[in-house]
Image (tube, protein in one colour):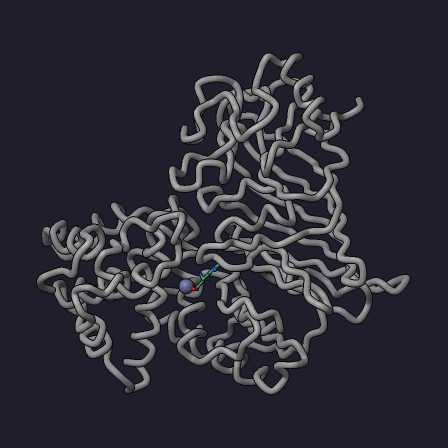
Length: 474
Ligand code: ARG
Ligand code: ZN
């Protein structure tokens, strides 16, 4: 059957037929803040994160994304077929993906043509027959166009699919996966990924996980296949591509290690390779076994000004990372990637832990102790903006505020002082093993800390995470 074109006039027609949403604006009939269950049979356009009301979607749970993509840096043109396997968590007469820009050519659900409509970054899919709660289904979305990154005027900067002169730098936190594939674009819905990406011969594609098979070249094009076998948040997915120098091998402990550098950063390739190996192995003794199939690091020449902990492949945007940054991004493989937040307000569970890992690395190397770093920050005047921003409640408008990082890390140090080193480090390992590959909340961390220490820690966490002032004691 013919699919609806993504134009408002026909959107109105969908609504006529299905007695559903208004055709314009970001409103759809079910409450956008409802979690995965909507009272009706319409999947909510958001997964239920109050700070990010339209991110992710309700009503289904993705198990796997297969992304078959082609990209040509000469024209910036992307073609894609995304095959999404999911389970309906409610009856669904329609459901949404997040997708920004790009043109949708066709959608099939369980092999049958489905209708669809676009409204902002919401792609609504109307299967021929409603899905029943508990049904597994496959949605196949064929699309193409010129992907564009998100340029946030606030503190998020440029993120998503970022074209570069020789390829693309793909770094998507917090919600830029939708710039290159139809996604349930929220860390609360993790899934496994397969990537099959075709590019002009001579370019390298660096996606998550490990390569499956050797790249195949024919007709001047090369196809790379990658698989991330462990669940992954959509913002950690990448297909960074371009001209790269590579170094591959294993860490001493035997984890596959891949470093890549844009030719401009050739001289930093060995450093990234060696440090990533050493740090991965060290964190495996501190945080628990390395959760993924490989480690590494990628330096591209686009100046994002930040790094991103893409699963198995941290990426550094336009700079050769110092050891501390590598220690930070690799700590995220446990804190953020294996254990992912359910709501963005809990971002300190990623950034506070990764920042504390930087302090631990310095301590491990006989540089400044975590205690002395803590004291330096504690010495900031009471008027410092960090003290008025409670890190336990990250704000969507200011998601990566330095309080999330620094005061988040200070929270962990205050905890360590209170419970002692033995309990603290046991807690870190217990935390990563109890929730490996899952989703977590601050409440769960507090509960585990109280259980392992047999202490009431509510006041400590409240002062450090939730009060808009400098904690009086620690
Ligand atoms: N999680 C990254 C880090 O390790 C920061 C990502 C910033 N993202 C952005 N869009 N500015 O610090
Ligand atoms: Zn970080």
